[in-house]
Length: 398
Image (tube, rainbow, N blue to C red):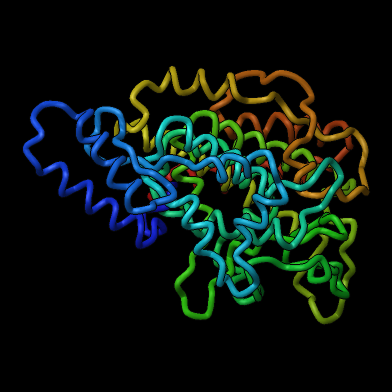
């Protein structure tokens, strides 16, 4: 999930070439000499961001400069740095900062903190701004489809979790609806049927990251699912993403009515095929699909050796998982911003097999249906929807 090396810029490329020529010189068996000479060459060339040799590797690593490290503790500056603008003309700034396959020392984890700072809402109860949402789009565009340096994944996963509702839409169905990398809150107003293509139960004043947006030239692809596939290699990132989906599930259920439908649905003669359960069913299938995808990636990476010790991986995921999320026993009509959904307080510790995603979903659904007196037929239909989508995602090749 890292972003390639395309954002290093001309100076960095030139410096890399100098290092390559230096490595071909007969300097004997003293790699320290190579490093010292390389640093001297870079200093003479005036390169602001130095390159060093990665430990035990011939490939150069990128040293995160102090100015970039400072962004991790300055959210406003981090957002300004990563914000690509409405026309994506400043996307190169995000690429220059994040697009490095090898990062020295703790630099990748620092970059993860910068990503989190730039895209996270300013506090509990605060909606995302357009600049923050555009920054989230930029992160996805730069990192999706690439292999991330170790340490960056948790920060990127927190970004995906922070935009859990927006990330759910990135499936190709809404490409024509997205007019830019971020969408203002006004575009989330319900139509005459109470329908909003961006999702249900949205905060009224929140901007949204339009990960499905493709720029007119077709050069930018913020593919969230490819990013999630890369993030799932890291147990901490895996836990963050899994927590976000289960928190979203609890938040969603507690806003449905006693028939398991959307309380905001308004029948209309213009749309004779939709009912109060049409879009909740669609949303729940997307949720089960996301959880099934995580488990699919876990299985795939175990088979191909990316996860070398599955027991250790699962133990690490459980350590990083915050707990179980259960919906309230009564219907809620509040509309929290997305960051609050992901940061939802836990209801207790995880019970049972955490990596049996279907079991975790069913346990929450069954308890909710019992407490809310949901008709048995409707509860069974919802269970089947989750089951079908989960299994389909788990076995679908990628």
